Length: 150
Image 1: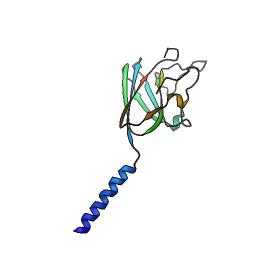
Image 2: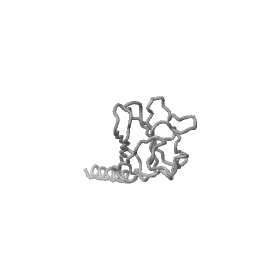
Image 3: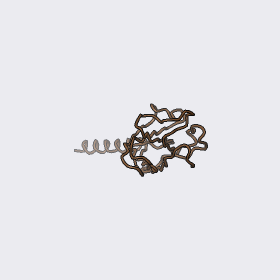
Image 4: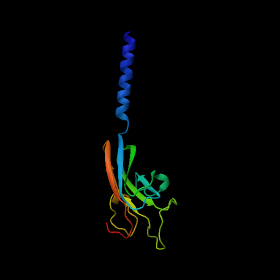
């Protein structure tokens, strides 16, 4: 009987110590507002480094099918604490791409986790990164077209 209780105690301690070693994570809630058209898909890319920033294959990629204008919310569960940047665009015509005009200027609404310093170039990771460090954290993103003021 003593061996069973000792074994149970050891197993319990192992489980508790394993939970302390796991990387902390939480739920990131992204609220996207200013959705003008009730159609298409909103694509959300979450990036964890400058090296991976804006590389579709390196992102945590989420999609939201849009059927009403206004505001949409998406939860990203199990996100490990760290530094991230978020890039969002509303693929209004559902072609899977950020459409651009002849000058290369985006013609569909977009947003980043922070307002970039310049709209005349793609932002750098460091300009739009944020710290994710709470069990539940909210990020607000305001979609806009390129020619709109910040």
